[in-house]
Image (cartoon, rainbow, N blue to C red; front, side):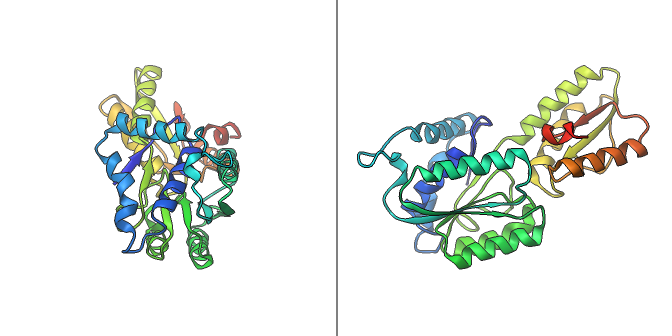
Length: 283
């Protein structure tokens, strides 16, 4: 089962959740998988709005302190090693996310080591990073599986090795309790629908739209495109470029290359959509 956080919540709430999971059910082996699924089970009964409330509960928990030491109550006492496995860390949002995760982990004295890995937009390196973290014996890991389903075998192996494993934002396939502890998602399709509504207002007579996205195959950009396409269908809006989106890896230099190539190929572009505006600004 998946947990859906409201878009206003970030990695801090996820770190709080994974620490709680890690202390309650250290690992994804058969002896602990049932207990690791209990927090997700309580979330499953909520729809999007209810799940956002659960996320907010996690956020509120960040301010709650334990009775000893002044540490947040969700830290617990068991010593653990925590990892953040990034698929691509070289843009400003991911750098902020990393800093937030490090700050959150630093609040917990029981987190003896925080390890960060950067897949650098390379699927094989991202897989190797997970294999390395598993071999090091980390206790818990938040994973940005930017390469999508290609990451599932490595995620599954990590989970089965006893690591509390939580994919975040990009869906890797599989299911909670079998391939990982839980998947924390955002409603990207709804975001795409909002883009579609804006496009219809901006281009009432129709036009050509160039959708940009992150790494090829990532479910965030795919779901955004799906929502946008659903709204603009039948309104004389033509999606141009690679479908469902032109991959930029959420990286400024790559975005500039992609936009330049499409401007040369398509003399008329009426709108460009992107899920990482800072990168588009460089183009």
